[in-house]
Length: 473
Image 1 (cartoon, rainbow, N blue to C red):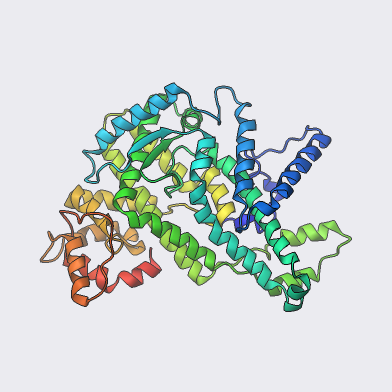
Image 2 (cartoon, one colour):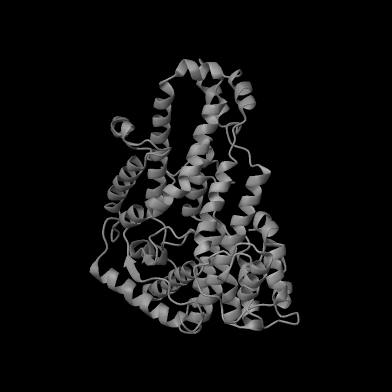
């Protein structure tokens, strides 16, 4: 956890703007009029207070949307050739044409059918509006846990004395979270390239979406034609959509893991009491030092580490599969495909502004740390056993590789081909084992793959699935 969620800690003045979701450029305007700054602060405060009673949840999402839209509207007019508020007809047509071509190429590289029923070109404002429902699912568990942790830290006498004031505190907390979320969404909306770039399908189901204005900015300095970059990104978006449509359990598993991580957030009340005794109200420097000391940050528990490991493994498997499938689909069709592949790998693995903003907002790094290992694993499975067996592993969560398998991709690929029943359908074997045991059979939402793994895979799904689900995925 590189950054505490929802502003638990104060920003480092030596790294101002680097992880601050409220400052997209990472630079403070030093020459601005202080009266203008004061006016902006009072205006934003007035907006927050006017909406204080409009939200009863842990995050004021109406405020978040309003702030994000205002920031994007203001920033869209500052850049020549870039607009965050609308998409031209030419850009929309280019996105649809690129997606159509990418789907044709993907048909030969994977057995999973097309997952998107529509392809859209989004502006940054479109992205904010259409991904907000998913952000609510991601942020609510974190905000609720933070709010309850702080409320729970109050002595019982203080709670009774506060009475109705506690509800006002909750509203102010929802406004604060909403303000931070709005600033973060504005930065993310101006940076993300597709609806699935952060690793979680944020947009509506079966909708493939690209952001042409952001892609135009991303293309600058790559020395590749913009049409080539657009087709490559369209192929990645389409591959993500195919995977999430074929494995409906995957989206829910990712969201559940974020919620599981949030449930482990706690506040060290003893440390807060100790720190409070050292604060001199007459000395602002002591307050700033206390806020930046790190004692207000939540501690990562063992349960949270398990959830984080599971999330990193899932993200690595998703990104690795997409990386391999897109590389096979594009092949030699795009001259700069390999360079673009490496650029996207680095962007995804090291984390850009979007990654830093998400880490600050939710407290989780959606970073597939074993991306190259996952790519190697899927590539070896495909070469040794064919794409049908490779893609068939996504039919059930107990069939996918584990964190340990990512450490030994060759061993996993070799194990798939061992055994007396190496050509057996893994999904059919898993279902048969569960039925024999009298347990429930999970509905995966899709047909069993026609070509699959072996007895060992089926046994692993039954005997070890529970342990691995809790420790590895």
